[in-house]
Length: 216
Ligand code: CDP
Ligand code: CDP
Image (tube, rainbow, N blue to C red; front, side, top):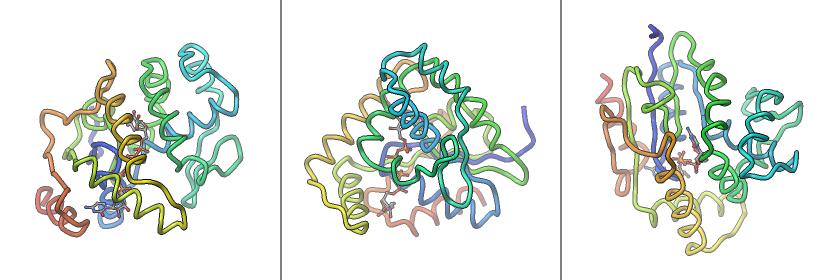
């Protein structure tokens, strides 16, 4: 349906999607869509508006009224910078709850597709290759064991001067994966034509090399 090239990178939390998407977009000089950030901003909006996270109708009605923007590396909601607020596990958990609702996903679809602009787009999320950009030029699905992904999160947190328990992180990641995988709409799964890469024993440079080799 489009001549604009798109590369999709899907997979569970902490698989390394965001890192690889950034490296790839930088290298190609393409636009980038962090679709998880869009869902996260919508979750913050729901919390601010005190909307029940299961009230599908109210959530879907709220979304078109929001002004969601990403500029200068910051996430904006109705004129406020909320970059820090969207990055904690509380927000991630609320996000995966609202992301399970079909009307919420439908309301965010067009906003995501608007990122598809020349010279190209690298899109990261859960359903980029399956639902949002089914005609993508190249599709990747990154994964890793829950333990490894939780360890990466722990390291990320400690680098920010924050602490957490590994067992709590594993539990949170498993709960979120389960919700994302078992929802009836746009469940987390590799597209039939995606290259699946298990990053458990690979560092970022090795994953990036695999991706570049595949698209060359
Ligand atoms: O976007 P996603 O949640 O899939 O993962 P990420 O934010 O790109 O990566 C999560 C953390 O894992 C980051 O701190 C990365 O530096 C680290 N990572 C890693 O250690 N080895 C990889 N192969 C990929 C990511
Ligand atoms: O960085 P991480 O992989 O932990 O999460 P994220 O990509 O920011 O996504 C946060 C949550 O948003 C996920 O757990 C999903 O529930 C939801 N999400 C989604 O449903 N579809 C997408 N395309 C992206 C995110």
